[in-house]
Length: 161
Image (cartoon, rainbow, N blue to C red; front, side, top):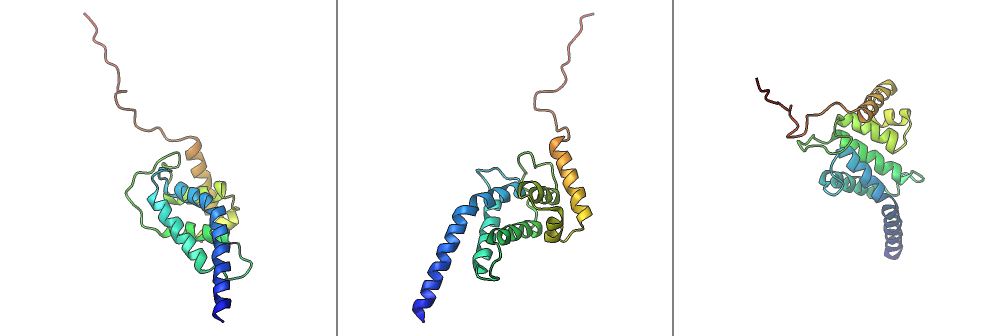
C-alpha cells in the first residue's frame, strides 16, 4: 500500500514539475505585469506566483481533466484582485492604470481571455469588463502627459533694454 502511494506521489511530483518548467516563466511575467514591478525586482509578483503554484499543486488531481494553467492563472488573478494595495511605485507602461484596469488588460490582451471568461473570473458584468479594457487600452496607447523632466523648466532670457 505504501509503495502505491509513493509511486503516485512521485508521478504527481514529476507531472507538476513538468508543468512548472513549462508554465512558470509565463505566469511570472503575467504576475509582473499585474503588479507593475520591475522585471528584475518583483517580490510581489513572485509571492503571487508562489501562492498560485502551491494552490495548483494542492489541487493537482481535482477535478480530473481541468487545465492546470487555467487553475494557476485563475488563482493568480484572484490573488491579485484581493491582495492589499502596496504603496510601491508602479513601473512601466501599465503604471498609469488602476489595479483593476491592469488586471482586465492583462487577462484580455496578454492572456487572451474572452470578455465573458474575464467577467466570470472577476465576478463583473461583461459591459464593465469592456469599459475597463477600452479605458486601459486607451491609457496605454495614449498616456496622460506626465510631469516634465527635471531641469526642463521654461527658459527665461533676459532682454537688454
